[in-house]
Amino acid sequence: MSLAASVIVPTRNRASTLALTLPRLLAQQLPADSWELLLADDGSTDETAAIAEQCAAPPLRRLPGEHAGPATARNRALAVARGEVVVFADDDVFVRADFVAAHLAAHREGPPAMVSGPIITATQIPDADARVRPPLGYHRNALPTCNGSLPRAALERAGGFDAGFSEYGWEDMELALRLRADGLSRRFAWAAPTWHYKPAGVAPDFACRLRLERERGAIGAHFYRRHPTFAVACLTKLWWPMRVADAALGALLGLDAQVERGLEGSAAPGALSPAKRKLLLLHAEIAAGRRALRRNRAARE
Image 1 (cartoon, rainbow, N blue to C red):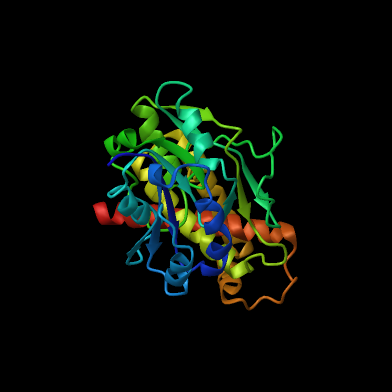
Image 2 (cartoon, rainbow, N blue to C red):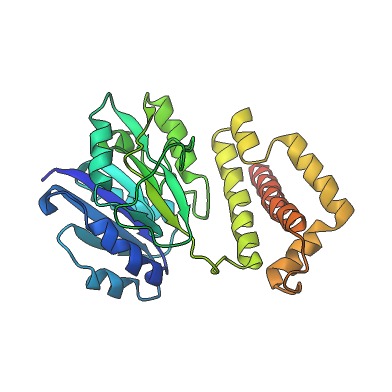
C-alpha cells in the first residue's frame, strides 16, 4: 500500500542522542497509517536496537544491516520505502510535530522538486513548538540529508545514493547534481525546520575532527572523479592550484607530521591556536583528497 511519506533516518552508535530525537520524529501530526519512519541501522553496536524497541510505534520500522556507510543505509531503506515522498532526516536532529506535513505541503506547491528547510545548530534541546524567523537556518544545499525531501519516483529514477560514498561527506550534494540533471528544481520550505543538536560542552575532540576531515577529503576525490567540473573541484578543494598550494605549505611547515600528532592526541590540550587548528583541519582534508586522486590514477595505469 502506498503511503504519503517515508522518513528515512540512518543511524550508527548514537543511542543516547537517538533516545532524545526519535520520540520527536515519531510525534508527527499525521495519521499513523499514512506515513512510515525507516530507521536504517548501519551496524550499530550500542543500545540503538533497545532504543528503537522502547520507542516502538506504528510508523517505525528498524532496518538492521552491516556497517557500510550512510549512503548504503539510506539505499537499504529506499528499497522498502512505500511513501510517495521520501523525507530525509538525521539521528541527531530535532523536529516539530508538523515537520513531515510541512514537507508534504511544500511538494503540493508546484512541480516535482527537491525540498529543504532551515537547519539550525542547537546546543540545547529546542522546545517542541519552537519557531524560526528568516533568515535563520537558510542554506543553499538543495537536498541536505538532515532536512530534505523529494518524490520517491525521482529518487528511484536517479538510482538512489552512490554507495561509493562509504565515509563522511558529499553524498547528498552528488545526488542533487544528478537530480538537477533530471530536471528537478530546488524549493525551500521555511515551515519545515530541523535543529541539529550539538550539546554544549560535548564538542568532538580534535583527533575526531581530523579523522572526519580526512574522510571528507578522500570521499571528495570520489565526488570529483564522478563530476570533474570546476564547481566540484572548488567545492571539494581539489582544484589544482589549491592542491599545489597545500602541498607546498604542508612541506614548508611540516603539516603532515603535525596532523599525525593531532590524530594521536599527543598535543597538549590548548597548545594549538584556533588558527592553527583550522589550518591542520584544512590540510588533513586536502592532503587526503590529493592522495586519493593519486591512488586512482595509479590504479588506472
